[in-house]
Length: 287
Image 1 (spheres, rainbow, N blue to C red):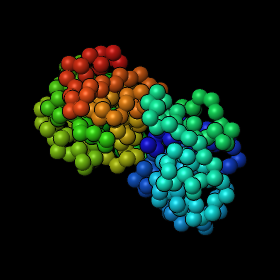
Image 2 (image 1 turned 180 degrees about the vertical axis):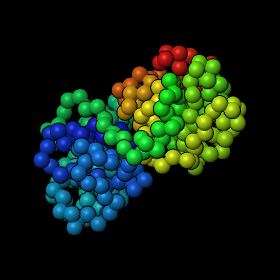
Image 3 (image 1 turned 30 degrees about the vertical axis):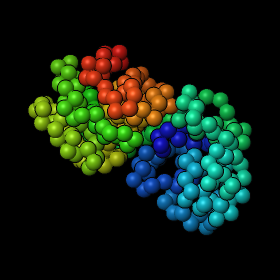
């Protein structure tokens, strides 16, 4: 979600270059905006009154967030009027039709900025790769002609079968890619199955902090994953990718990789799956 909000944050900074922009985040995601030119500060504190903000922009409209800005008495509070439980706490509102699956999430976030006089195409998202992280991952990425990253985790659906990811890894290795398995603690067991299928696979699951994961992803030549944060990180760096979508409620147009060469392979119907051959065909279209 944070990655897909970056174009809107950048648009606010472009429209108001003298404004000081602070992001209220989860601490885990802070490396995504480290040294970002549009972000002046990051906080994890819901006691907002002491900061004396003039404007809040609530992209997610969670009750906790909206209540915090209302309680702080921020003079201008911009949010989504379609959210019945929270809309009354905002005094600047935009109705966003979440049933409209013809708008990408980036475009939905940009639409929220209309009361600020901001419109037009979203700027390309920016992520600054940490210099120290670049050095730490250099041995993994330097001197390797073609790198493919596979991330087997999913947030909004079940993940694709590890055995199927292993077959794709084998296909990529046969096509002269060095395959890196990426992920966190939740992906460890699935990643172990994938890595056990071929000794040439490098399993980095659970071994990289977010700063280093970003550094590795920025150097990839291809990415395969589910609809997940790493997939959207890869898109920021214009890494060609294939996204597998098994959740029938997550429509490909709304959640596809933004501004990179991509293919989405979506399951059709409830409890449907995606064949390996279909994913390999999609890979052929982005190579």
